[in-house]
Amino acid sequence: MIDALRTIGLDIGVSDGGQTITVNNPATPTTSAAQHDPHSLFIANSGTTIRFLTAALSAAGGRYKLHGVPRMHERPIGDLVDAIAPIIDGKIEAESANGCPPVVIDSAGWQAGEIQVGGSVSSQYLSGLMMAAPIGSAPAHSGPAQSGPARTTRIAVTGELVSRPYVDMTAKVIESFGGKVTTVTSGLAADQSIAFDIASSGNTDGYGYRGLDYAIEPDASAASYFWAAAAISGGSVTVTGLTHAAMQGDVGFVDVLKRMGCKVDEDDNGITVTGRPLRGVDIDMNAISDTVQTLAVVALFADGPTRVRGVAHNRFKETDRIGDLACELKKLGATVTEHEDGLTITPPVDGTKGLTGAVLETYHDHRMAMSLSLAGLRIAGVKIKNPSCTAKTYPEYFADLEKLIGRSHHWSREA
Ligand SMILES: O=C(O)C1=C[C@@H](OP(=O)(O)O)[C@@H](O)[C@H](O)C1
Ligand SMILES: C=C(OP(=O)(O)O)C(=O)O
Image 1 (tube, protein in one colour):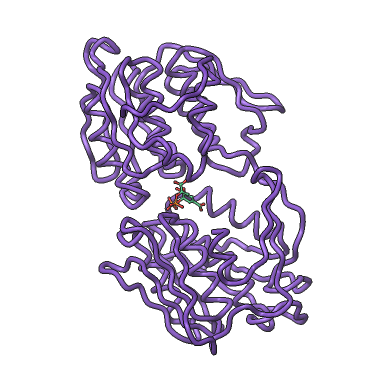
Image 2 (cartoon, rainbow, N blue to C red; image 1 turned 90 degrees about the vertical axis):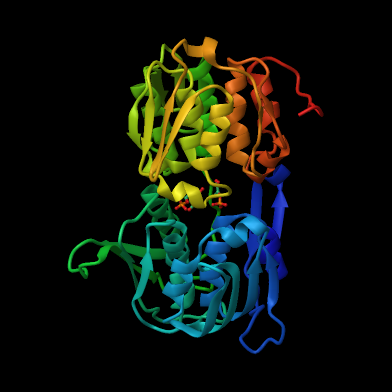
């Protein structure tokens, strides 16, 4: 994301060892519909980046080609492109089969009008459009520091909306930066499940938002691995800085661990999970789908099967997080049944004794590496291939895990 934004001319400072990011709004527009060659933006395999930028850049105007690694070109973005096409002043296209990136944009901004977007594949399409709306509807969307009334943009979701907590988080962040979000649940067309009216406050520094100092919450999806470590090992782990008051839905992972038998204690500083004998659960994880892999590994150590539902969209992530996950869990000795919307993990009849070490593939997926490594807390001989793929969200993951188990950090070259 940072590289892409720098490519289009934004001044971005990174300090405090990556903990502070400063974004300076350019004094003059860096892009325009008149520019000759499109900006070529390499997005690797970050769905969040390509989806948020597709929306924002089409709203800001200019010419762009957003592309990535081969897997990125298999991750659907057609619902987002179809949502933008009717309102773009210009052209937007997804170039790969089945509406996948590269995405080519030639835009002079958005025209007024209601936007309709499908919500069943990813919430990132809706979040991207919501964040882009104040840009697309700013009095002069191609230039900063304009004043005057901004229009309100309605974005309606057709069909199911997955990963809902991320959308609520998007709405809160937009409001923090000066936008206004109104949730609409009545008076919608029959095929619409929800809508959001988005306006900029009018009192902004440019592009529909105002700048401010903003503290980002600790990463609840990353915290899930350490709470799971407690569940698997029978130990006790406190993650500080996260409570149920956080915006992130993934804090709800501790509630799943509680249902499985863990003790969960919360105070103002954080949440402590203490492992106890675990029982399998039947659980809908639509709202917290990034923690499915974590839960699947915990499920190996439970008494009875665990059925995960509501996450058909996990097949479109960094890798197929249902099929590829099932494949790796089977190598450890579990019986795994794939369903269209999730999976059932049945541990061996003789429990942990029936589990076995294995060399596990990670499919360039940080969450596959982080979650599968937890199996090694109870099973000897678990090896994780390409562990450095955790760099996507958590470069120090293995060092922190080793700190937790009291072992000094080293990379093994054998796997
Ligand atoms: O808005 C976001 O930052 C995200 C939304 C979710 O994606 P989906 O809506 O595609 O499930 C989540 O899984 C992803 O890791 C991050
Ligand atoms: C945000 C994630 O991935 P992506 O942006 O590629 O969907 C993730 O897995 O946490």
